[in-house]
Image (cartoon, rainbow, N blue to C red; front, top):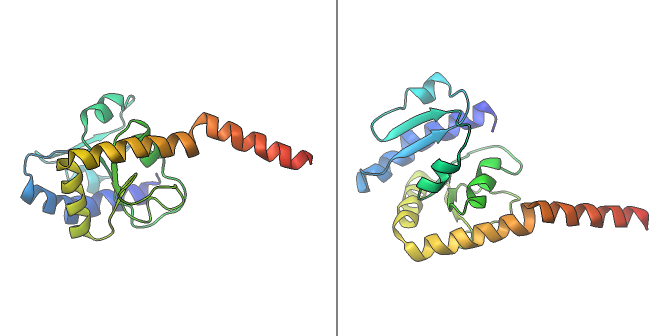
Length: 166
């Protein structure tokens, strides 16, 4: 994700959303992974906010987290961090902007929220609702398999080549 998007998303989430989450669930911890965090992001480090920077293997972090957030307020295209989270079976709370064009459906494969209170409520709901967590995890994996897997890319390429030859 470009640095400007990353900075804005992390700052907005920490300053306006995670504060609301922490009032309800002070034990929750946020881990921010991403290469070369700018000073404004590094300054957010606290007891409940870990700024990790570049992590060569994210698998242990995805395996130990309950959910992922994508609080992007602008930008376009498929978001790799969302795909990566969903491919690990980790449900995501995201803004509408973050999931544009990704075949994700609110309440079925992702939770979508655009306002701080709404986003915080979605994070808390997903954190505590086991059945919702399972549904989003399962359906998120299915979306990744159907639309973003190597097999899906292979079939799209075969279809393209066949249309070009006819």
